[in-house]
Image (cartoon, rainbow over all chains, first blue to last red; front, side):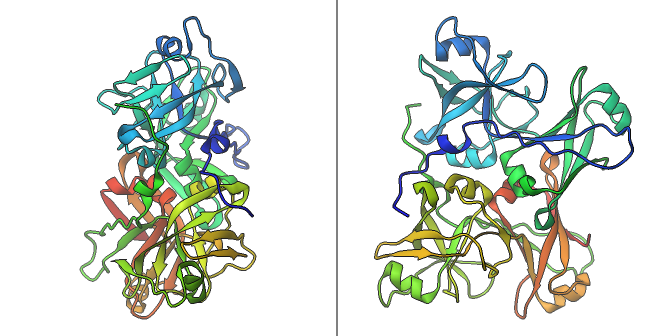
Length: 221
Length: 221
């Protein structure tokens, strides 16, 4: 073994890590559960896409996500925090949406020097900002850097099955031996044409060793 | 805000992050509970201390840990994984012990390219190795790189209070709003003159937002 270039996180986590586990057993009508781990990523407004990548630029689909219409883009940006620390290649998720938002794990926040608030996606009022650097320009984002609050997406039929409604809280039990974990207080988000899917971040996925989990289970707590 | 030196993790996590939360309320005889988050660190054999830092070298105490006789040392080593990725300054914990061991979080393992086994401290047979680089020499460690299994240390009186014995499993409930988490299957380690203390790693501490937890609770599961 020879010695040692600096860590190249571009090689490590440049794609969205979407790990899928299916809940097995239970009543025959139980909905199929998917648990996905979102690595750090950025949502951009249409305006910021053009600032960062050039006028008229459209994001390129690299990989479709589990929810219909959403995708990981080929494009990445540099996220720069205070103290001139940065993450060089953070994946953009599409399609573009109203306001730009940067979703990081606490581990990322610590490395950037940003004290991340835990927020549901879209609730970014008063959150920290950062600088986004793309090949064609720079955005000085005034707010929108968060740790996304753990949550579960579902459709109306799933909500009826579990007896929950939008805004309720549920638990996710991960059976993985010495790393077994019950994630409490997952925010329930109900929407039409939405598939049942839990979103965790990389810290949560790593804490529970989700890669080696034998079983996952959505529970009312 | 100006643009951007590479991330300097040396500035970020070079000391052991020891976060202490006390369990409140409950019966008056309930033992005081401390929860500590161990950042990545290295234990060294006396022989490896001399290879890395020079013949006759003794580790220098930087900070005493919660358990009597244990400390974070001034000394750090570079940990080099396969693919020439490395962590430049990983803290050494003292005192030296029988076999060298490297304890990393999965986040660290992913960045190094090492698929970490989850093991209790000391059970390193068949685990991956790495290269350790110090100011005076290099150790090609054949095994000993692990993710430490979450665990709780306690003395005989604490074990009697909770009705558990060495090798049993307990749970740690962290009350922290949207990040509330029950860590299951903590390995119980009972020893004479040991203070009650849960050890989590940084992924677990971050997943549960332990820094902002209102309460922690040790539970039989």
